[in-house]
Length: 231
Image (cartoon, rainbow, N blue to C red; front, side, top):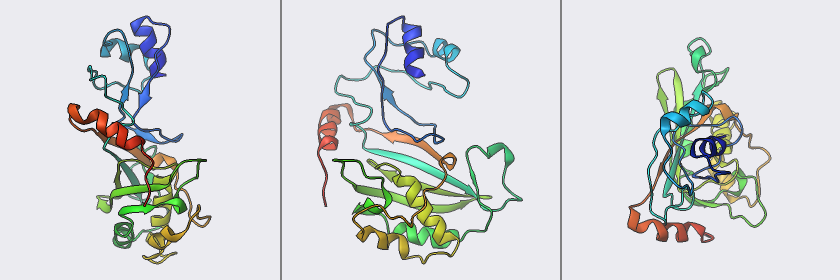
């Protein structure tokens, strides 16, 4: 979609984008970052004229040759929003907030989340891909009340497939009282995907920001990211 728009505006045969983070179907992004090799910077207003109404480019700038939207990133921040009071749920936000029919214990969810932070093998929460590691450094996993909504903030340098939505699925089970607070962290001992962890619906999840190091550290960061991590 954006590749086609760039090709149209720049009048080139094709444009190949590299993005900071892939999102599952139904997941949103307000802070996505992408890079491409193009002959000139495109005009944002012209891009808006050929993009669909739900896609917008907020900024365009030239970057050093070493910049890589995916591998140069130092962190990615996601938010997952849940409304657990049907009477208070905002109908205008229904496409971005998961409506949960039962009250959730946000305090218990926060306690369970805190035990997951750190460098772990998240195999129980990931859909395994051949040759890919499931070891990740989870920097932040907070659960807080925000008015009528519960917001979970998740930060890591990288995530494996379905990891964020699986973490939220486990925390929802704790919030409902179906699982004890210690259960999600106990799953870290498993060496393969946990069948008893539900993957939460995609529409409550949004990629909100991506962080990068100073320009003189971009190449080193990309090399570090490409290295296979272990415990």
